[in-house]
Image 1 (cartoon, helix red, strand yellow):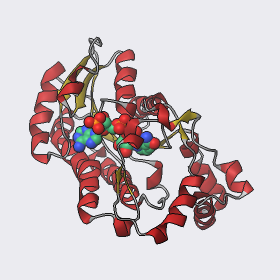
Image 2 (image 1 turned 120 degrees about the vertical axis):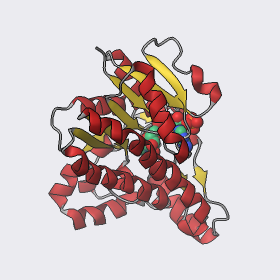
Image 3 (image 1 turned 90 degrees about the horizontal axis):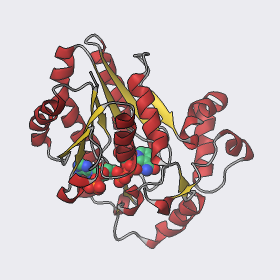
Length: 289
Ligand SMILES: NC(=O)c1ccc[n+]([C@@H]2O[C@H](COP(=O)([O-])OP(=O)(O)OC[C@H]3O[C@@H](n4cnc5c(N)ncnc54)[C@H](OP(=O)(O)O)[C@@H]3O)[C@@H](O)[C@H]2O)c1
């Protein structure tokens, strides 16, 4: 009998690539989109059933879980992928923007997770995969709220993995590096930025490569994380800029790594840092897959 996976936020990018990957591996997939117009995005793939879900709507999560369970009669894995990027100096970012960032990236993710926990606990099996980010490992300037939301996702996953271990439920956090997806076309940017911030923002953008990995790079890592028989590992890294981080931190030690990263983030990477941490994948960000 085919296994069943639920993936949120599948209209594009890593979510869409994850749906394609699991369907190609013989899984049945319950995919969610939040716009009616996107309900046809997986049309033609007989293994995929597409449902509407806005993860911001916490009240909708329990009914959604029941609906998802009804599609193929069981659920073996859940990928919490839906998310977006809020950007700008914190001084110019409204608290409302920060609340909304956490609503989608953290509280919505927790609400969907909670809705599936009773099922996984009673089933004595299940894998929950939460999409965090490289920013959870190292805060970037003008991305502090996003980074904080993704750090919350990573440590939430670690805590939950211990809570659920005795019920046979495995929890993972994926740490993708920069990927060429539509996320960069939908950034929620701060407004009214004081001109004193402009030189710093310009250095940051000058230092940020305008390339990324293709979404299938992370979809492949999500697949590995779901089928990995090792149950206690939480963090899985994807993309060259991310997979290099644990080793670079080990070689440099946490404080020197942080000092080197700070310089690199504003366009002054040392030769050593360049050697240890490669740039993201080669795809131009405007490719927007
Ligand atoms: N791209 C990167 O460099 C990168 C790096 C690290 C981590 N990530 C994370 O990877 C995940 C996937 O992002 P992506 O890069 O593949 O971008 P993407 O192509 O924009 O995909 C994000 C998906 O999440 C959906 N979404 C956003 N808010 C939602 C909500 N409230 N309810 C339901 N769905 C919602 C989007 O729906 P719409 O199409 O309707 O907007 C879209 O389908 C995100 O969690 C992101 O933070 C991305």
